[in-house]
Image (tube, rainbow, N blue to C red; front, side, top):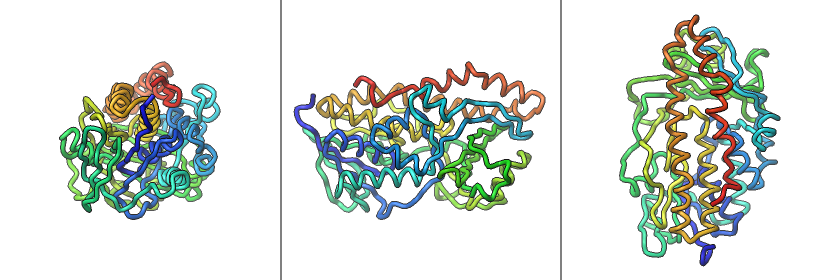
Length: 398
């Protein structure tokens, strides 16, 4: 047990930072969160949370507010980009609860963030600081100072960097500069479900696979919206911002030759946004004696196993439990031991899935069906996903 409960300062009020804050508050550890935005707005599109993530949120007492804004789809499918031919990937709904003890939820990222934010503000009043951009830290013998852009400094026993893929905490700790463009760009948007033909209003997720690109769709916000993500390969990213508003025609051009259902979705998007997918090489460490990084700050990953949000949630619960069990240096060392191998494997396997989703064999309609049937046979699906969904950050021995 720690000699005393530490005071923890968190940089970033995204999913990773808020889950960590909630987990620490539940344990009884003093926590403050510093967020660079002056106002927290509804951002992003969809997020998929499998049992390894949802069991943490349920343990934090968030099941009811999340169920009120989530979908619990009945299954996921693989579909061929050209013909729309369909293969079952896996069942969800009741089967996820039966096999893994927790649901599979699909949500609007903004809805999830609002639930987390409201819960933290209610449970830890006065402990969220907006307009507080973190630019680094100074580690001392028995703690660390969190340094803000305006010159203010805050002392804690532990600093947790949850400040995303452009993390200043990571930059100072690892010295690896800016994240790199991966050669993949994402088109993202939402469609009011009622604007789609009746046959396309289904409570399933779909991975449409094709040569050089793929599309992911699933319902969010109680089934009122369809989330669309289309990934395409490109040599460079010429736009100054890593996210930009695009046009419907530009998005259609990226998916020329794809099934009419995809083109119908694109034509019905509210606003098509294009995002550069950024990456970094996996780190060999996540921590110093009094500073640790979590979520995208620690292990940004391509979204091809749908585990980015889940990893952030797992990180938050594990680092909180370690800090409740050990003094800070030992706690952060144990967090790193528990998380480094798993998160590195997810980063690597997500990149492998990109090659699987975009394989040139999918271009030939005759060979494509054989390729999909081989790559997504039930045994291979279980091998790719069971180890993800079975992980339990709530009961894992720390």
